[in-house]
Length: 379
Image (cartoon, rainbow, N blue to C red; front, side, top):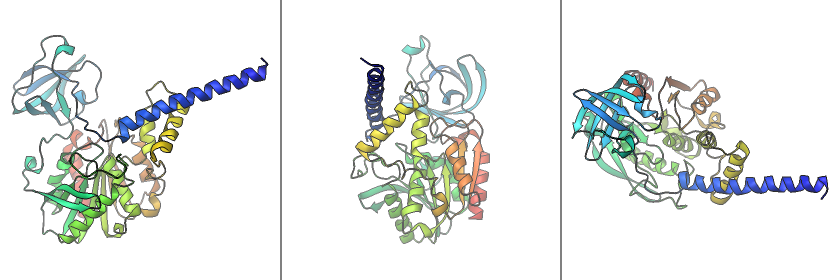
């Protein structure tokens, strides 16, 4: 066998390995990102002690939430409460302020792996608008794929409306943290579910599309609030809800009726989010790129259409407030920084030190609400 034969064989082996691993990575992307199935939150944290207004937590492996600054919900089988600021940290043990809700948390007295886990909940509020003292109505709006559930939270004189969109596999209660400030400023809100949410109609593809098709549901919601008397409409999106907002602004014939946009940890460049999420894997960058290419061929992800930054200067024409935590481990903050750089005259990026994904409010509610309130007044 000649040297050229050996080189050719080596190239063939490398190419084959990358295709095989890329195919496997594409399958992983489909299962972890595209396929629609129930995704229950699982707990990793244990409670070592709880006395009065203090609770001591421990996790068997590092987790961002256990020491996240500010406010968190805590949920266990049969009960829930809420956490305040970190009081002390001693090795793996983190002591936080605690407020009772329903029941008492399970105390871990043995090996940590043998104890029941609790869930630390960034949504903070457990149920819905009533948790923040607001009246609301369970309602629905009609989209092209069927009837979609929503909360209607009245405010002001009914002429100013916010359509609020949660993130990928998230829940409407993700938006409850914003509702009090919207209500104080005289805005009504329609907090929407959309295609592929549990109990909602499916997308015709049977997969999550990260804004490529979900924007049509938002368009239906805009029509709905216009019929309810809205003369001014803003759009609010968390995480992939932000991608849905941006897709709407780029594609909808109703985009000119929007007065402003509020985004929290927006998933603006899906390809960068995937690269960010796979950065710690053993796969090489080339293997990841091959996997993404194969996934696009097999399931038509359309990476270009899910890049909502590159064309933003062409379609983003309204004031836009963006919150993003500097410690976001899900959607890198560089995506929001790129949006601000692309449309600096319209985009105001509020970076929250040490905050995780859609957790800027949790880290500092007062600061978050001040920025949001000022923006609403300017709109």
